[in-house]
Amino acid sequence: MEAAEQSRSLPALVVQVMGGSLALMWLVEILDTFAFDDGLQAHGIEPRQLDGLEGVLFAPVLHDGWTHIISNSVPFVVLGALVMTYGLRRWLTATAVITIGAGLATWLLARSGIHIGASILVFGYFGFLLGMAWFERSVRSIGIAVVVAVVYGGLIWGVLPSDSGVSWEGHLFGVIAGVVAAGLVGRRKKATN
Image: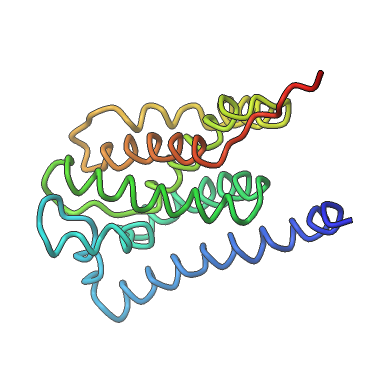
């Protein structure tokens, strides 16, 4: 009965959590633009600077303008919703591991500059969903990974070094942290004799 109740409430939970998360990002961008004259962006990840450590937590909700947040919004919601199909607890774990793990790796190893944007989570969710296919090896997780690879496979180009002002490091560490998160929460079904 509990599984049936969870499946009925999953769409509502996805709307609440992912919708709420997206609304928070947009609210921060609205405030940053109109109340802080883009000053909140300075609170992103600034590699190897002590005051840049705060960005590990704040970077995923900070964006460099409207184009940046618009480009992150749909994949954030779609991939985040797919992660939520594994349950709220796994989504929370994945989100925390990606935010902190990828954020710290970016802080330690990335180029100088301010690294911001939800793409750290977008790439992390991408890595998580692909990783779940490996760690769970269930028909469901493999099916989700195939769909994600077909629809969002082009994301892989975002982890390659570039000089375009894009934090490819945050993308790369996001994918890695997502796979690590999948390893932490994924579980294979035991064979029955």
